[in-house]
Image (tube, one colour):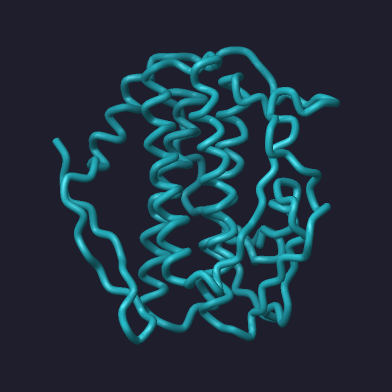
Length: 255
């Protein structure tokens, strides 16, 4: 049964406050979709790398071949939100391509429902951050996914797991640079959804196993480490200006 979902909207002073969207799918319903696929084992397959763009065309440029996309951390909270917006553009585009390839893929119908719901979440995150930043301050990123076979279940889920794990670590690390409590709250809400995505995808890959939540704590990555990883999936040359010189490590100390 649908329930109410809490979302955030921008206030006149630039902060955020909650509002309610009625009739949104509940977390329980979302996880119930996962349970429907829990008895399935992962099909054999590998991440497909190839010399052409056949499996991912169109819209696949060469990573790092585009114009600079610079984020200036002297802007404070706005820079952190811009960084998050780049991440969400990447995730939203990835899952959009996954959904667009359903007709020719070996992803089951039940799993398609789960992945389509995740796509909807990521698009909502992207649009929310874009509206919060405003058109002039929201950087437009150009994702690229050369070599990922979106028709292959294992390739998709493996890439999704890596992307979701990275997103959680990115938010966990970036939130320490925020000042406004409203923005901390907003990113905290987003990362909680990303963590559920990560657990869900892990369960699809290895059902009913400890992979659902393999560690007691999540990773915490500094923005520069995240940027170095996602550059492989961005045509733009992502870079930071006035990058933070300090970083508080998480429990695992891998930031």
